[in-house]
Length: 284
Image (cartoon, rainbow, N blue to C red; front, top):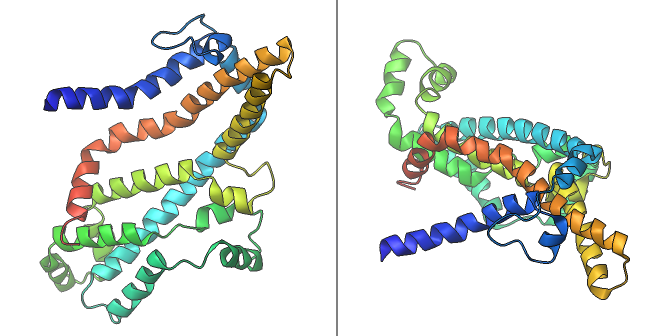
């Protein structure tokens, strides 16, 4: 029964991914009319041709790569340094500072106060806001702090201190090399989060040269939905119907292209991922 259940769950998870792949290569009219189910019908690459010719898509792709690299680097760096400080029992005022960090996890200022703050900082329509806003996650800090406390013996710091090593040297030379598992987890969490993020860009960015890939995909999906509604109402001609079906193929192709970088991260981080999550979740 366990085997049957797991196989069924595997099919449920994999079929949507498989359908997206075959739909991106199939005849747009077959996809639009629901005739593609298990195998592609009428091999057609025109959707991919349109994708590669769409300039705004690659501008969004470039922006997303930059936001992901910059945001992940900043977030992981701040998380590791903050978690190390919180893991030190001799830190002055640690309980009070940790409390200040925990409060925003449950009580948020809200969208309007945040927007007013961003406006006063002159970060509206500034791509830095996508990297800075949300770069610190208390949840990741708690996991990382627990990892440091449960994995790295306190005696190591005492030994390093006797050899003349301070907190900075101990953190960079001893703690970081012993924390590859949790660093890999943080990189995966933050990279996937930054890659899929679109809300901050939607609220704070107006220049189309700064918008990320997810907003470009959202625009395409919105226009495609409107075209499908017009087709259902019968208010479009034959040429418009073909364009509508082609937009459906473009949608699936964009999903594949936008998901590839994220799918490529997991195989390299997999050996650290489970270990880091399990160790970081203990003694919380």
